[in-house]
Length: 252
Image 1 (cartoon, rainbow, N blue to C red):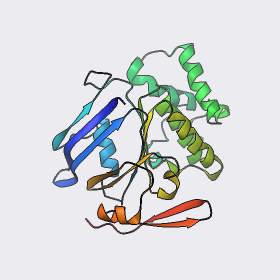
Image 2 (cartoon, rainbow, N blue to C red):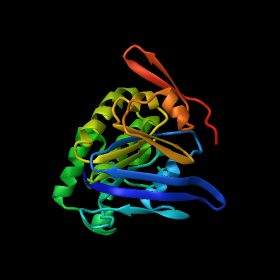
Image 3 (tube, helix red, strand yellow):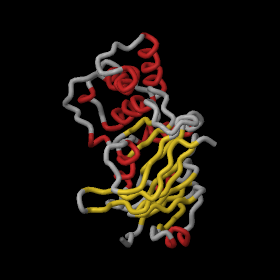
Image 4 (tube, one colour):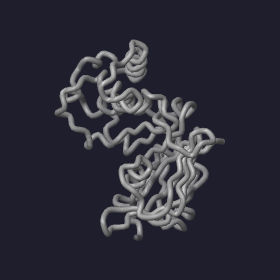
């Protein structure tokens, strides 16, 4: 299995606040990792480090493109939390999706007919083709989530990262959303940050608990005893066919 990136002995944070300490993680092609942990534990900070938005205080993150140790232009697709998006910007749904090709094509490049068709095909796949000409400011939270998922994957990245995607996924689309992620995992690795542990354990392959440190669990089956040993205690309650998981208070 080819590596996408490797983190070694990494610490990061903001000013004097060290949010992440001594992080080690390897992500390979077609991995599907669920990241769990408490608010303030460093989950989003870890994504920012991977994206290059903040620099680590110490340690390294190395990207691999084939046998070369460098980050390619279409390595990562990113779906941020919707509340981080400026909805006042006058841009249509189709243009939002196509903006996911910006790093490849350049800021002022014209998109080809093939690229536009690919964007429209993604909108059809996610059931929002009829919204293609609408401004994003007029969309619901669930519709926005689908638009920005299309944007994240339009460049066919090796890795898709999602930050709390279930926050704005409407119940009608939720099952389709999970199926779409499983299908995408046949083509790309996925890292998903979520508080909805009971749901993501149904489709992720492995789990990482981030609470200042990172504890990686190499399967999606995880017990309360194991999580307690990671200083990340979880209480699992099963209702019928769907397990529900509740995060308890974490010790810092």
